[in-house]
Image 1 (cartoon, rainbow, N blue to C red):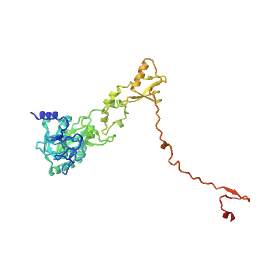
Image 2: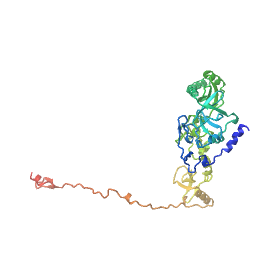
Image 3: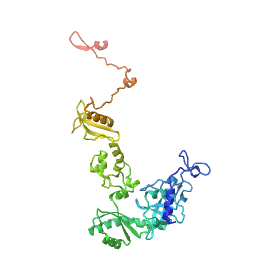
Image 4: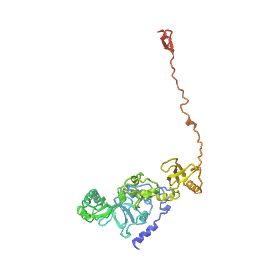
Length: 417
């Protein structure tokens, strides 16, 4: 059986199912138990980092939580391993040497030519499920893992990575001198330093054959040009959106769908390019997340052009809360005047009455029930109401027989003086 058929068969069998107790499954969601019956605690290995429950050494782009990392026998399900390289570049490799790999291990993998250095991000059953979501181009061309990275490999890797920024700046200057309408956004060297991938953005087709020759003479490495879009560039750079979370293209989104302004109109969004555009200067991908729900909910609302006739007057459409099925009408066509909010069902009833030639007395038929809230006696009174306020006594003045005035409270001794 060919390797492609074997992998496809493994993917079909890799369906999420509840784990039995003997495989580490627990009914209450507690920590898996060890052989002695005690709960397994997170363990730290200096070379691998915190590997419990599939947590990586550090946060990385397009990270996947490996919730089967500590399940016994999970690594034996398949020999396929997912390895991540710089930013969002990932690949699948065969662990043909049966190495003891865990998430976070740095490995040397087969490349063309030479080898590359990457980090293990997934092992076991979840790799097959991940291949359903992002299948490789050719199952027969899946390469293999050589070994865990040695100190010599890491020295070459660090030397190659240190050249990336200067190479990107120099390549931009070369592309400008050749008059090419393109932007080189990033450069990634292979782990052994024999190859460099140049990621570029261009609106149209670019003839970079002369550019490849100049770059090969300048850097003495094998050159590979890879065109990416604005959204992919934003995912490689990373950042935070206006919602306060990391960009979707950085954390989980790999397949990008075109977004149109019609999605904003269905959701009653203000068609302001500055608010609707993301960090890639394109329309935000999240505008497509709920547009189907808005389209379905808007079918339950009456047309915006329909006017509602009542005894009080004519009401015009003003705005709508689509998901709540609430519509606000105004007595003026252009400004907000005497706004009245009713349900979509009430609006349909009024439209049906108008077609029959009848007019309701009021647009809103809801009866407002006033409920008397319990009175809090303690809140009505002041805590200092029992405190006695001392009033200052005013001094009265008496007039003497000679016409001069003196204080009534003065003492006899003062009068004698």
